[in-house]
Image 1 (tube, one colour):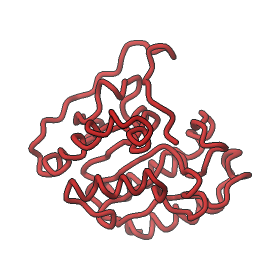
Image 2 (cartoon, rainbow, N blue to C red):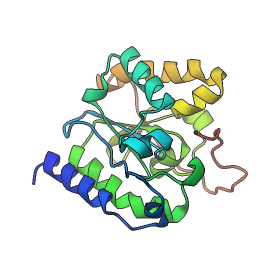
Image 3 (tube, one colour):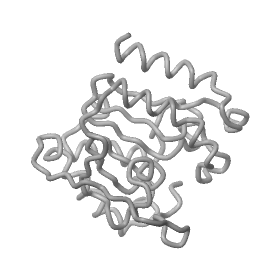
Image 4 (cartoon, helix red, strand yellow):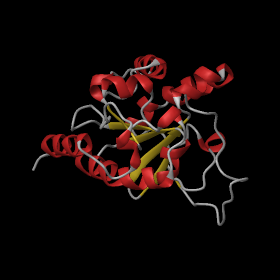
Length: 209
């Protein structure tokens, strides 16, 4: 089965998913969208109000900002794959819960396996911690890491920059490196997770919505 068919199958499974309680209140699940041969995959946190209404990722204010960021980096939405670590909207846009992350993880893993992206950009701390456990987004954003043979670039979620304008220059600067990352001009670091992690020492970030 080719990548496009696999992604279509995953999307159909997500449409009917009941793995966690989020399915009870959703309007529309949001599997993600983009070409099966995308070189860059963007992984956000979870759908918000407008995503839940439309069934598409990043269509609210953060989505409009993401489109601007992509354009500034010489990219088009049509050329990248965009999804979230959780496929259904958490009530009140709260943070995803462990059982929700666990329920959606197989879908995301299969999407990554099907697409085989050259670069994965994580938007926000929950998607970052899937690949860089225990990391602080404030310390690592905009850097390039090699994890299990893949290039991972952690970034702030666009919504964080909308809530806190002082973050906007950092987000814009992080996106500016993507062209060089794709061209292999940016050195990738090996990530070594902290020996221990507590809630106090965990990644800090503003509420995404």
